[in-house]
Structures are given as structure tokens and as C-alpha cells.
Image (tube, rainbow, N blue to C red):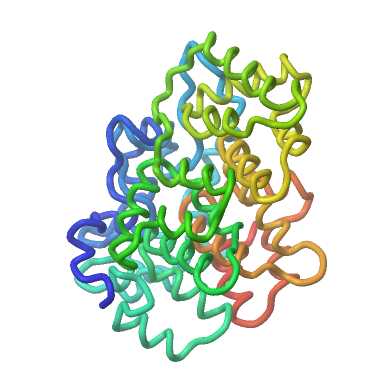
Length: 391
């Protein structure tokens, strides 16, 4: 295939992103990665098994909580993260007729497509993903077409391979799809971004940073480079005094002056850890009388505004960020299929349940009903399978 030897360094038994550095990521991950009762020898095609220091917090039995980390006892409270999970909701989701999705990947709740092309116990088909993965991926590439093809082939990819593919696709040819760069780089963890960089380099013989720099410019480019160089502190400590100072610095760089010092926003928003930044946002509102998002909208525009807003929204509530992305991709006339497909494929096994909850809270309609009304044919069917119908 086009990824020679990639499994030796990118694919772990979980089939997704490898184990996180104990010092990074989110704390207190369920060792099973959130998918109960894995079939021995069968891969979990989601994100990887986290160790206790590098995973996600407070798992309910049999339920992957894709939320945010426990707050530092002396720091910012948990209100900025996900709402309390309902243990009865379960993960994978339970649908009418009992059970989760039809078992194709060898584990409860496996998606009908994902894992179906696996060989040698690899749950994601050809390890290099498509194109050029060979086997099932090549067959499907030649037999399918349109948006349905994009979803199916995306589901056959390892998580970091899919992200790298989407980033490459967003930059090749005329123009740039800034939304893909923003959605991926603003929402992935430091460790995930590092793996994406490795995959991208292996596949394209060019660094992701070089391609981003060649396709973007100005402060927007600087923010993206800061995100893809994975320099964010992944700890959990909150420094209250520094949080107050950071809030004042951001205020003085924006609302309190003529013009905007975007570098100060970058220095704080792309470097500090999540818990600390939640405290900064709280202090910022005290200093300025506004939410940080409101100030970003007032002080910036275009892609720079979008990337800073995405960073803040992902830090506060990642499922709500993706719920908004999905809503905007389908509202009004026409559908932004690239955003819809990328979000549904990338988040289906991560936090789709929480995205659905946030979508209904924000818009008063279910994500399932939105997709059903905005798509058609096999494309609709596979997206609805990824979403799951609400009881």
C-alpha cells in the first residue's frame, strides 16, 4: 500500500491513536477505552486505550465518557465541561430492537462498515487507510461514488490517518478549506496532533507544518502552526494569580486598546492547559464584562476569528462545538457535505452521544431528524447509522 510499514509505529491494539503520554491527555481513562467486552484479538477502531494518567475521566461502567478531565480541586469547577453523564445511556448506544449497531467489527456496537475490511485482527481494514490501502478499500473505492463513498472509505481509516487525509484534502488544489484545518487542529489533543504529524509526513513526504505554511498566511497561519506543533500544556494545574494576569493581558490586548494584539491571544489560548484557561475565561468576564467569545467576535474577523472561537469552544464544551458545526452544515439551503461527513466519521465512536444531547439542547430538534431531512439515499442511511436514532 501507500503506507509501507505504518502499522509498526502507528497502530496499537486499539486501532486508533496510540497510548497517551502519562503526563498528557485527559486523566482517569477507563483502561478498556470505553468499549466494553472487547473480543480478544479484535481491535477497537476508536481512539486508543488510555492509561490512568492519560485518558478521560470518571467512566461509567460500560460507558466511554468522552468528556473533559477532572478539575483540579483547587482550581476551576467542572461546570465548564460536559454535563453529568447518565449511566443508563450506555455506550455504545442502545437502539430500538435491542443492542447497538450490527456487529461487523467484532465487538459489541461495531459499525456495519468500520472493521469489516480488517485482516490479521486489525479492526480498521488496511492500516494505511485509503487511497491505496488495497483489498476492501480499493474494491469500495471503485464500486462506490459520491458522498456515500467518502463516508464508507473514511470509516475504513485509522483515526489519525483520516485526520491527516482530511487535512491534506483541505489544502490540495486551488483554495483551502479552512474549516477542516480549524476543526481538526483546534479539537485534537496534543498527543493526537503529534501522531497526525507523523502520519502526514509518512504519507506525503512533507511536513504538515510546511504544507500549512504554504497554504495559509498571517496570524491565522501562526495560530495553526502553534496548534500543530502541539505545544499546549496538558497538565491540570491552575495558577489563580496567573489566570487573573492572563485575563488582564487578553483584555488589554483587545477590548482595552485601539486595534488588537493577536499574539497575546495566541500566547495564552494555544499554550495554557484547559483547566487554567477555564479559570482565565471566568476572570476575563470579571475584567471585561463580556464572555471571551464575544470579545473575539468584536476584535477579529474571518478565519482568525473562527480558529480562536473554535479553540475556546472546544475547551469549554467539545460536543457543543461539534453540534454547532453539524447544525451549520445543514441549516438553510444546501448542505456543506464536507463538514457533515468529516464530523460524523471522526466523532462517531468518540462523543456522538454527547453531541446529540448538545444538539437537541441548542436547537430543539434531534440530530437524527436534521440528517434525515437534509440528505437522501444510501448517504442518508449510513449517516443515520452513525448518528443512531433516539428512542
